Amino acid sequence: MKRLILPTFAFLLAIVATAQKTASPSQDAIQRPKLVVGIVIDQMRWDYLYRFNPLYKANGGFKRLLGEGFSCENTLIPYTPTVTAAGHTCVYTGSVPSIHGIAGNNWWDNQLMKGVYCSEDKTVNGVGGKSAEDGQMSPRNMLTTTICDELRLATNFQSKVIGVALKDRGSILPAGHSANAAYWYEGKSGNFITSTYYMNQLPDWVNRFNNRKIVDSLYKLGWNTALSKDIYPQYATADEKAYESKPFGADAKAFPYDLSKYIGKDYGKISSTPYGNTLTAEMAKAAVLAEKLGKGTATDFLAVSFSSPDYVGHSFGPNSWEIVDNYVRLDDELGKLFSFLDATVGKNQYTVFLTADHAVAHVPGFMKENKLPGGVIDDMGMMKDMNAKLKEKFGIENTVVSLMNYQAYLNHPKIDSAKLDEDGIKKWIIQYVKKNAAVVNAFATADIMTTPINKTLREMLTNGYYPRRSGDIQIILKPGYIEGGQTGTTHGLWYPYDAHIPLLFYGWGIKKGKTNRETYMTDIAATVAALLHVQMPSGCVGKVVEEVLK
Image (tube, rainbow, N blue to C red; front, side, top):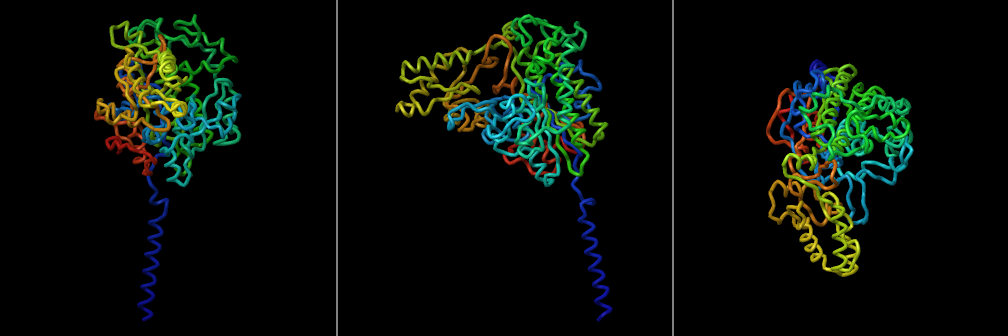
C-alpha cells in the first residue's frame, strides 16, 4: 500500500510543478509591442500622400509608412460634423458623436443653455501656464473610454499613456480618462502645460523643455521655402493670392515670412508655421526619453497630434505654396521621429498608426478661379437676419441662440415661456434657410430618419446627433461651399473632400501592403485593440481591419 501511495504523490507533485511552470507570466505573456505611437495629422487630405509624393524624402515618414507599412486607401469618416475634437475622439474610441458625446469642437448645451467647449472643465486648474483658462481642461465631456484607457485596464494600469499636441483637444481626448499625462501648448507663455486633472505640478523634464524656449530659436530661422522656388508652381497656385488669409500681418503676403519680430512677444504664431510640427515632435521625443516609454514590462502608448497643418491649411488652403512646404517639412519631421524611435525603442519593437482627424475643402476663391463649383455662406450674418425677422413675426428676441456645426439651436426656454408654436418656428426657419443659394437642404434634426435624403448622408447625420448637444435644424450646404469669409477655407461637411482621410499602419505586428476596400475611422481603435489583445473601447462600433495584422 505504501509503495502505491508514494509514486502517486510524487506524480501529483510533478503535475502541480508543471502547471505552475506553464502559468508563469514570463513563459506565456501576451505578445505586444513595447510602444504604440498614435499619430493624428490635424487636417490632412488623403490625396496629400500622392499629390506631394515626389517631394517626400526616401528616408522621410510618409514613404517609410507607404513602402514598409500598410495603407487603407479608402478610409472615410462615418459621421458629421468632420471637425477636430470629434475626429480625435473617434480615432481613439472607435465611436461616433451620438455615442461618445463629443458633438463638435464647441456646441450649445440644451440643458445648461450655454456654449460648451469640448474639453473644458471648470473643476480643474491649469498647471504650468500663464492663463488658468487655457489649463482648465480634461476629458470629462467624453462619455466613453479610449483605446489608451483599455490598454491601461488590460495591464492593471502598468502601461504609461502620454498625450502631446499643440491643441488641448488633440492631446486630451486621445489620451483618455486614465492617462498618466496630457500636455498641450499655451501660446501666451510658449509653454507646454497640463491641468490638475492629471497632476499638481509639471514634471522637471517638462519644465526643462519649456525653459529651452525652442520657439524663439525657431522664430530666428524665419519661414522660407524648404525647396527651390521653381518646384512649387508644379504643385500649387501662385505664391500670392488674394483669397489666402494673412496670419502674419497684412503686409506678409508671400514667402519668405519674417518671424523674428515675434521672439519673446507672441508665442502663438508658431502654430501657423511648420515649426509647430518641429516643436511637437521634440516634445514627443522628450516624453519618450523622460518617461522611459517602451522600456517597461507593459506596452506604453504615446498619442501625438500635429496641429500646425490645420492652422496652415485654414489660412492658405490645399493648393498653396505654404501647404506644400508644410507637408515637405512634416515628412522630414516624421522620418526623424521614426529614426529616433528605432534608436530608443528598437526597430520593429513599436507600432505606429497615422491618420487625420478630418480633411479640408478647397478655398472657394480658388474654386471660382478655376471654374469649379463652390462658394461661401455668411452663417453669422444669416443668424442675425433670421433673428430680426423672427422677432417681427413671433415677438421674441434671439429665437436662434446658436448656429454651429451646421445646425441651428432654438431658445427653448423663451419659446416655452411665450407659449409659441415651436413647430411653426422650425418650419419658418427651414423655409428661410432653404432660400439661401449655398443651401441644398434643411430639416428638423428630429426628422433625420424620415427626410428623403441619400442613405450615406442620413447615416452620417445620425451618427453625429447627440440630443443634448445637437441643434434643432440641420443645414446641408452644396458641395464646395463653406461657412466663413472670403479668405481661407474650412471643413466640417460630409463630402469626401472633408471625410476621406489617410490611414497607415507600420511596425510591430503589421503586414506590408494596402487595401482599397472601404474602411472607416471607427475601425482604427478596433484594429489596435485586436493587435494588443485588449478590449475595444466602451462605445466602439468599428470593425477590425484584418488585412493589416500579421
